[in-house]
Length: 336
Ligand SMILES: C[S@@+](CC[C@H](N)C(=O)[O-])C[C@H]1O[C@@H](n2cnc3c(N)ncnc32)[C@H](O)[C@@H]1O
Image 1 (tube, rainbow, N blue to C red):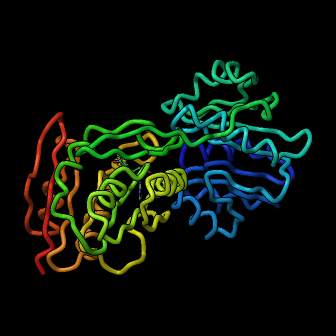
Image 2: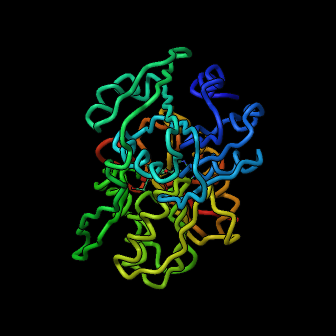
């Protein structure tokens, strides 16, 4: 399957010359459709995209701030879901582009690329529309990327249960700079977690994991997220609060350790700009396999999402621990 943005790139493949860098592409099969290009690389912060491009034999840069070891003649940038990421991503490219390199941008109309001309102007750049098909736009971008601002970690203080936590985050990390209302509700329902291996799945800026480790220092904390921005933000959050934990990038549950005593999550239900329940379905099924006997899965979700049925199917039991502001906290126990 190819995303519409990827199909638009293939339609304009004649524009792509020399060494080409694909920046934050979608999780699809594009890498396998680029046989006419001789030298391609990929920069992504998404663990699923990393795996797909590596499996297609492409050199992948995977970090919040990658160290590029080569110069590219062409960069193809996918318009980011969070607009505030664009300037920073372009700034990162600056040092990786050869003199006179061409920069192209592609995006889905639903993702906001229609406003790129204005957005680019505000950044001191110029966007020129070149093509329009499949509800997507193809632009070239000119101007000095070096004057743009690089992504910086920022932090805010969270006060809970008479204690405070410094939460570090990057633009592009879930709910950047704020505590989500669903997460806030979930944090009030975690007093049963005191020891054992505990996973904060889909950790974002690491709020749940940091809170758990601060409240119950005896736990062995693991945090995972598909996004490298989230992984690096969580590492910074733990370090800022002198808390220890293992933080990994993974699409779905991390492969190690084999079992957890407790899993806690405010799980994702989006892939890019689309609602996608399959991630949570897979997460719940994987959790049922990876929890030790007597272990718990505690998660929060919007009350319009069909988690109750999924949890009942996978675990055979379910409790509603709290309901407020359109969110529900569910808990299931691994019985055998
Ligand atoms: C609703 S946010 C929760 C973030 C954080 N736990 C909080 O409560 O603030 C969901 C997180 O899921 C991550 N995510 C999306 N798809 C994923 C996948 N397939 N595997 C792991 N994490 C994923 C996103 O990057 C995002 O950080």
